[in-house]
Length: 145
Image (cartoon, rainbow, N blue to C red; front, side, top):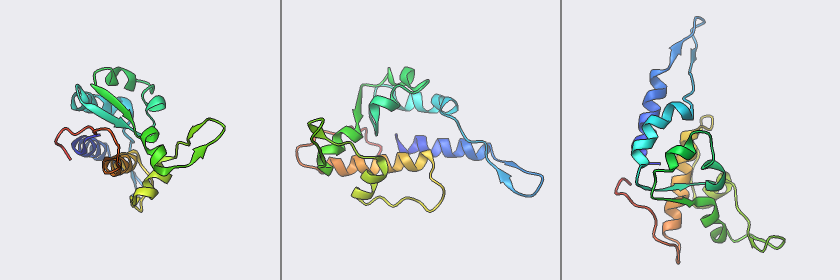
C-alpha cells in the first residue's frame, strides 16, 4: 500500500481520538470499511502486492476495491521459494507467516502494540527484499517508493 495512504489512514485515526473522563485516552480504531474511500482511488489501475492475497483479497469490501486494480501479486507465495522450506506432502515451498518473512528480511517491528499499519510496512519490507532476489519478475513500481 502506498505510504501516503498509510499516512492518511493514521491522520484519520488520530482525528477520531477522544478524551476519556478518567484522564486516559481511547482510540476508535479505523475499520477497513472506513478506510476504503482512501484506499480505492490510490490503488485504482495500479499493480498491488498483498501478503496473503488469496485470503485478504476476499475480505469484506476489499474485493470490490481490488476489482479496479491492474494486477495483484501475493507476497507470501513469492517469498516461499526465497525462504526455501519445502513441503514434501504438497510438493511445493511452504508459505511463511508475515512475522517470519519480516524477520528474515530484517524488518524491525515497532515497540508498540502491533497494528495494521505495521503489517503494511512489514509487507513493504518483504516486497522490497524480493525485488533484489534473482529471477524475480518485475515488481510493481508506481514511483511512490
